[in-house]
Structures are given as structure tokens and as C-alpha cells.
Image (spheres, rainbow, N blue to C red):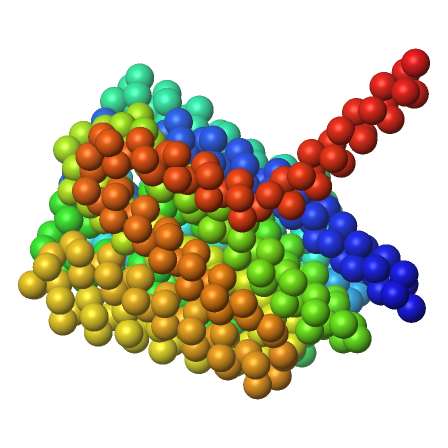
Length: 483
């Protein structure tokens, strides 16, 4: 029995690692693209232009759930269940594409007039980008539902690579400013969308004769409850920019947008794991040793996230120097707070995977809504007193609440053995590193590098040793085969 359980555990961890690796293909290249384009955009765009660009990018994630009723989520879930029923598959694809296309066109007409204060060219480019982004989001979920993970990763990778090349051309060489940045992201999104349409044969599977009000009603019944949760999540992540825009101005929004760039690296690194974890947690939710498995994964994930966080804190002074151009020193002071916020955000995402595994999506929505309200209240109450710091602190406190609430609430339906002493020790140590980072003194920055390396390697020593042994054995076996 023990051997069977051990093999099952290895199978679960192997499956999680493979899924994470496949999804990571589509997330690593976006990071590389971002590292190259950020210095160009911050150097070539004025603070007002960058603030507008950041707001447009932010609004795209708000616009998507409203215009589509989250039907793309239903596409993935329903396609998984009908891989052998080709007519049902094509019917789902047809209904999703038809609905999303129609509603997004109507919504974009309204958006065009809402953005009346922007130049006409910027308004048109924004609407085209949003339309392409909505279709891309729907079709990329269809690809996942069809069981095409490599195509999913390919399409996810092409968009940032193309955007990087086009930003270099339009913004750096042609000096087209905000319009050039919008052209780059629009064209790259259309290119990625085209790859999906061709490689997944979406167009040939789209048949208006398969459009069905009953099928559409079934899809919407599944997807619409996700809209409030998605909007609350957006509000939690991006409402700060709107508050700063209203009370301080577009330049403050630009500073805060830049301040989020380096801390968001932790979220980007964690995004592939989160997607894979949600699937893995769901598949194994009924295992006999699920409590042991979830507890082990929580503690392991916390160690990995804390180690990455320590190294990221140590690297911020260099990253800021090489990635950020222009007068954004005020953004540096926000980063220690936002780094801690992103750590708590990553932990809350892990716990969210357990909610989804047990189909507690309403609870996920409720916790996110409460956190969003906390974020808004703190932001509004403090923004006039402490300026941009209100946005950073409100984000941190909202995510701290989200983690504490979910850690306690999840115990109502799934037992997890938390190592509270370990959690407190890690958070205290990382907080000290963040204080050193905020002080921004050369000696303390060097000390952070030493502390970060020692901390990250010591808490993950067993994992690092295991990986080294695996790599060593594979190289050794390969060498023996050659000999």
C-alpha cells in the first residue's frame, strides 16, 4: 500500500511538473520580451503617454469579462468533455465565436465614444487591439479545450516576441511614441490569433448551421457567475491606477505602473505553475492522502516562492538600473511594498486552486470581492495623505487579508497542515530584506545579495539537491549509452 501511494505521489508531482513545463513555454518568452521592451517604452514615451498606455493595457483585462460574459472559460470546460463528439465540439466552438464576436463589436462601439478625450488614432487602435485581444482570449481557451498544449504555448509565445520586434521598430527606430506601442501590441496579437485560427482549424469548424440558442444558454449558465469574480480580481489588481489618476494625475499612474513591473515578475513566474496546479489539484482532490498531498505542496510552494522572492529583492537595484529609463525614482520606493504584495498574491493563487478543485468558485469570488473592497477603501482614505504609497499599501493589505481568510476558510472543506512557524519566519526575513531595499544604500544592497542567496539555497536545499542528482544521473546514463 505504501509503495502504491508513493508511486501515486510521484505520478502527481511528475504530471504537475510536465504541465508546468509545457505552459511555461508560453510564459518564459513574454518575460524576455518584457525585459527588452520596458527600457525602450519608458525611455521613448513621455510619462503621460506611458500612463495612457498602462491604463489601456489595464482596461483590456476589465473589458474582456464584460464583453464576453467569460464564455471563453465555458469553452475550455465544455470542450474537455466532448473530445470524441465532433459535432458537439464544433457546435461549442461556433456558439462561443459567434457570441464573443457579436458582443465585443457592440461593446467596442460604446468604448470608442467613452474614450472621447483621447486622440482619434489612439481610440481606433485601442478598439482594434481590444477586439483582437478578445478573440485571442476565446480561441486560446478553445485550443486548451481541444487538448493542444503545445499550440497553446506557441501562440502564447509568438505574441510577445512579435510585440518585442515591433516595439523596437515603431517606438525605438521610428519614434512613433504611444501610437507605435499600440500598433506593436495590436499587430502581434492579430498574428498570434491567426496562428491559432489556422493551426487549430477554427475557421473550418465554425459553422453557423450549428448555432444553437440552447447550447449558448448552457454555456452562459456556466460562465456568467465567473464575471463578478473576474471583475473583483481586476479591481483588486488595477483599481489603484484609477484612484491615482483621479486624485493625483496621469504621471502618478505612470510611476505606479513602472513600480509594478519588477514585482510582477514573481506573478509571471508563478502563473504557469498556478494554471498547472489548478488542474492537478482538481484531478487529485478525491485521493485518500489528499490532505498530506495538499499540505506538502503548500509547504513546498511556500519555500520555492520565498526563495525566488529573496533573489528578486536582491536583484531589484540592478534590474531597476538596467530596465527603467526616465525619471521614475519614485517608483523604486514602492517596489519593496509591492514585492511583498505579490508574494501574498502568489500564495492566495495556490489556495485558490484548492477552492477550484472542490468546485467552490463562489467562495473564490466572495473572498476576492472582500479583498477588492478593502483595497479600495484603504486607497481612497489614504491617497490624499501619503500619495502613491496608498496604492502600494492597500494592495499589500488586501492580499494579506486574502491569504489569511483563505487559509482559514479552506479548512471548512479541506484539511491542510500549515507550518505556521515556517510561514512567520519566512515573511519576517523577507520583510527585513525589503526594508534594506527601501533604504537603498550600497552596503545594504550588497548585504541583500548575500542574504538572498543564502536564504534561497538553504530553505530549498533538499529540492536543489534532488534536481542536481536527477540531472547528474541523466547525464551519466546518457554518457554510458554513448560509450
